[in-house]
Image 1 (cartoon, rainbow, N blue to C red):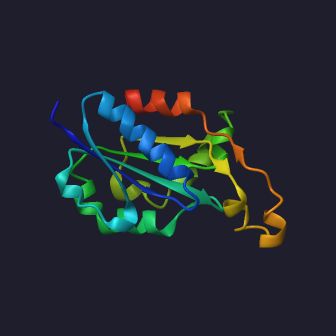
Image 2: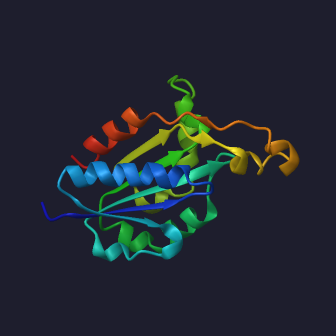
Length: 162
């Protein structure tokens, strides 16, 4: 398989980057040629047959650089299959009743790309992430809590774009 895949991501504390790298690894095992690149590096979408875009979520919103990347590349992204993923605490919830509200995280970018797939992954909370909400002196006492389900992430990467 010669298909090139871009996994573009926006992260704050590194959790989303780690998820993106794992997705890239799984896609590579499926035979895809994969590049995992931060959206801040402005990868050229035209060079790929499939694009996955992921972002950390704070305050129920994608990082601004991820939204900017989609807006800047929306014409090119309409020419390839696109999948979206978010890494956030909303990924912990599993009930169907709140799913539409949780998937609203994608509302700012969904109309720009018409994604083939969307998924929420639970994230990781550490002192750096907590410092967005708490004063630094208080954040230093917060333990790292990793809620990422690596089996779910790998499973999704095995089935996306099948």
